[in-house]
Every structure is written in structure tokens, then in C-alpha cells.
Length: 259
Image (cartoon, rainbow, N blue to C red):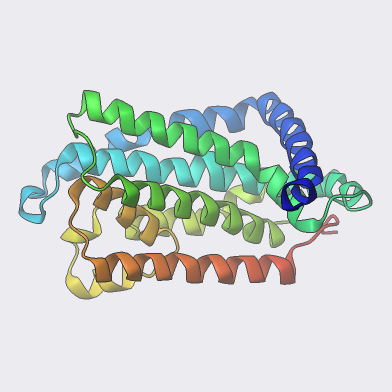
């Protein structure tokens, strides 16, 4: 009975996701940013890593660069691309028209996000495999932590994209409204610089940033350094941010053009 009840929802989500994927493929600038940035940007942090004693913290350059690549995938393949998608569909009255049909609000937002989330997941898995071979990171010591971090990062990136779109007036201004999260995540969430090398007080604050738990869990999958208490803390922080983001989206998301 439950399977039959979910079947119409699954069909509607697949149809919306296929349509959104077709639209995503037509936007070459977004596709180029989503595909290239996570691959290119990690190499830009390599000079800074050479100045840090990573072995002292039980880290390797390969594991840090792999985590950076996955973090950039969260930010560019999912977050920024979805901010643009939500705003563009709203300004084109697509979201308004979809609400007049059978789709619920949650289905509309989820279906729109599925192609970007799928791209981010595929990219992250390819990066894990590629780094294991090319950067000699080896197999993860705790793969379930990496998987948990990927799920947390992808879900939260999509939720934060919908929240950011709520306060974004146009596709052009989306580059500005998305910038604060991108900047603070790159600097403070352990993407560009591992939080393990930061002063303890600063690291404690940075661990509370939205994407910090996901990045910690992804990296811990390779290092195996997080204790059970730290894992639970990271999961709790990720869940708290997700609940806050979903509540804020339900409260403030705009379905009609901001004019």
C-alpha cells in the first residue's frame, strides 16, 4: 500500500527532474562552472598546503585536496547552480505555474534540485576514485563517514540554495547573494584550509558553520580520526542547520517574481 501511495510522487519528481536537467544542460555557463570549478580550484590551495605541517595533524596533501574538491562541488555544482535555477524558474513564472498542478511545494523544490544534487554526487564519487589513484589517498578508513558527509553536504547545499533564492531578486544578483556562504565556507569550513591547523578557539567557531560538519565527516572517512562523540556532534550540527534551512524556506520562499 505504501509503495503504491508513493508511486505518483515518484513519477512527478522524475518528470520534473528530467525537465530541469534539460534546462540545466542548455545553460552552458552554469554547467561549465559546476564541472570545472571543483576540479580546478583544489590545485589553487596546494601552495598554501605546502606551508603547513599536515603530518603533525595526521593529514596528507591528497586527502586535503580531495576534501577541498568535494567541498567546491557542494558550493558550485549544487549550491550556486541551484540558486540560479530557483531564481530563474521563479522569475519566468515556472514555479507559479507548477503550483497550480498536482505537485506540492516540497515536490517542486525537490524535483528542481535533483539534477544538481545528482551531478554533485556523481562528481564527488568520481573525485574520490580519482584522488585515490592519482593522489594516492588510498581507500577510506571509515567509508560510512564519507558517505554520511556527502549526504549531509548535498542536502544542506540544496536547502541553503532555496533559502538564498528567497532573498535574491534576479539571476544576476544571485552571484552576489550566494557569495557570503561561498566565501565563509571556503575559508572557515575546512575546504581551502583544514580546520585542524587553525587555533583551537577559531576552529571551534568554524565547526559551527553550515558546511563544516559535512567537510569534517568526508575527511574523517579517510583519516578515521573523529571519535564517536565528535561524529555525533557533527551529525547533530548538520541536522540542526538542515532543520533551520527547511523551516526558513517554508517561511520565506517566494514563488512569484520579486518586483
